[in-house]
Length: 530
Image (tube, rainbow, N blue to C red; front, side):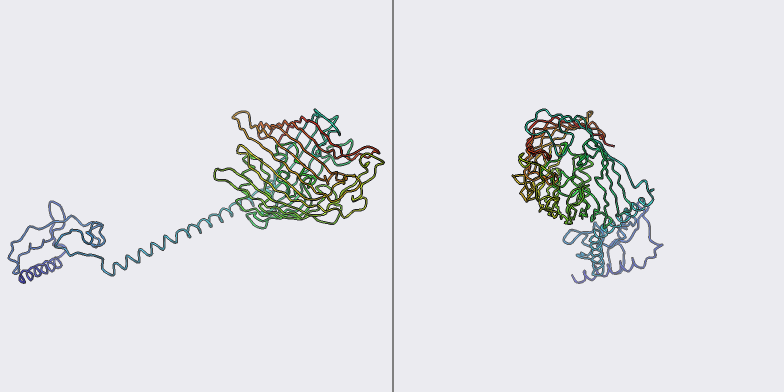
């Protein structure tokens, strides 16, 4: 037994020595396969092996797989698998190779972990390069390519169908009343553009304004907007708006009349600021995502209100746009907006806002309750109260954008100037009111878009921008249809059931001012955009 073991060991040793000492040029080739021919175990005769020589074994030419070490071959038997009994079992690679493989695996893992950060860095580099390219393009633009003109005009016809009590009157439209037919409600020309990358301008005069006191003459030119946006960063997230602009109170107030469905704004929130504007300085915070959302709403014709930030605050005179300031007290305002895209793609928006200040009411002679001579009530700026009366309000907004069904509602509460019940003095009184509107967008293939809508409007409180701040009660329903023939032309037809206070001061003795007008109105408006 021991002799056989020694014999086999000697055979293996002689085979190994013989294979190592054969010159590379003397290796025979198999004519059939063209491969290498090496002796098989037991094929070499010698003094230690009595066995006869066996035929030579042939192998195919060496390939990339055969050049690999045994533990690197994909087909190499694993531990526990059957293999050639004449070959030793290799349960694991030698230690140096195993270490090399471990180092390679660790390096590969590190490279994979580094890929996200490298990808992020590449994306940031691409964004910076895109910004540089955009900035370069802007710098290459001619001065007249950085500005643009646009505008719109509104021709109206109002018909009073039913009238009880006081004469027909609407604060938002001087064309409503007896003896009126066609009127040019708005004629706007807008000039806007960028002076630099961080400074923009917006100028909007109205060529159809009728200031207070105008009797026979109408259609004066008056400033509506004249402001500059000063951005603190390249992404325009932080900005100051300086000049005369809309104050951020009331979503419908901030919405352009070019986009609004009803012909006039609701009284509850619109009574907070005459012409919806004032002179002041405002700060707005609008992240990039919110900028894109506000722009999308306008571009998709969803009746948006524009970009007034997710957060805004500022100081302004308080007397109203294009009105002379009456005291040296500033109003302070702040607003928070929360737009959101729901999982089904529906866009909604919530908002909270509030302001505080002192308001000076302009007075005019009236006959208190229609008895006696006409006198100017106390508490006005031209009697005994030049400093004004407390003026503070808060409001909430909810907008469910029309996709295609839409809903919009706002409500306000507060305190402000209001004529007392005896009509002898303007005092601090409570106020409240709001509106709710339902709308639907129907898009046709060949006939444009149809927008049916219905709105309920309510307000109880002083109308501070009118002479003597008459305490008003307003309740009305409006039903209408807007037909957008195309982007340049649209027609609105609206029917109104109203019960509202006539806010005109009548300076005649023994004649009562501020009576209720109850009636029905049929109204039309043709708007063209350019």
